[in-house]
Amino acid sequence: MGQTASALGPDFAPEVLFAAVIEGVPAVEYQPIVRVEDGAIIGYEALARFSAWGRAIPPDQLFAALHCNPMLLHYAEWKCKAIQLALAPKKGLLFLNLEPDAWHQGQCGNWVDPYLELFAAARERLVVEIDESCHLHAATISGTLAERLAERGIAVAIDDLTPTHGIALRSLYQYAAFLKFDRAFLREGSKHNPFFEHLFAVAKESGATLVLEGVERAEDLAFAEALGFDCVQGFYFADRIVRKQGTTQLWRRLWRERRACTGCQMTCAVCDEEVIDG
Image 1 (cartoon, helix red, strand yellow):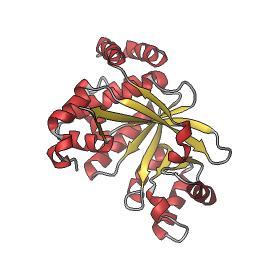
Image 2 (image 1 turned 45 degrees about the horizontal axis):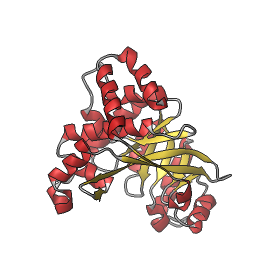
Image 3 (image 1 turned 120 degrees about the vertical axis):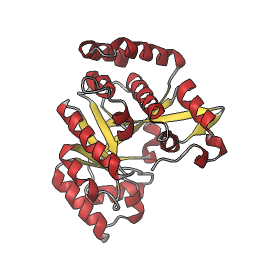
Image 4 (image 1 turned 30 degrees about the horizontal axis):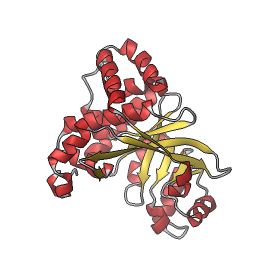
């Protein structure tokens, strides 16, 4: 369940969150996803970094608080996706997190999907990560979202798999090109943990590429290699992270182009392609 802004403490009062989402432009950190076999970077996951009034705001806490304001949640998510696409490295896959509730809130009837239209020009290299660790309602939405992405030819990753809810998401594995395991497995997972063994076996059977997140030490990398993970991600590769700062000018341009495309499915892909290459 989402938290209210007040429950997050005085540093996250409603006016601070509002400033971060409406007035601020997030920075983006592109974390490399590295193939275990040869150490090559196959792509990057785009992570938003928010701040307001001189304070950094953890994105997970910000989005948790925004669940009490669905339209602001949608606005913040769409803003992040547009900026992450615009500033993305030119080569490799691009992994974008998409909050299922924000996607659901952004639907405009049956004739336009602002997220899928935004993704259209980049679909050949895009992998949309769906994180469902919240509640049954979001799990239902996640299934619909995964189906829509698959229909558009956009690759799907299921993010943050843990022993507690990974098996519950098995119905989504049919859509997944990537299954990303939470760093919890570095603390809890081993060949002798039955929950981990079962989840890992099911994931292997799916044929998806398996990614272990939270790799910070050489021992973590060795753990991933020994178990048979295909790729890893984490601060062990901090020197290969790409950091970019969004600007007000960039966001104004992206917003103008979005407004020009609203309701016009035939021209959205053209405009979005210009944004990505700009």
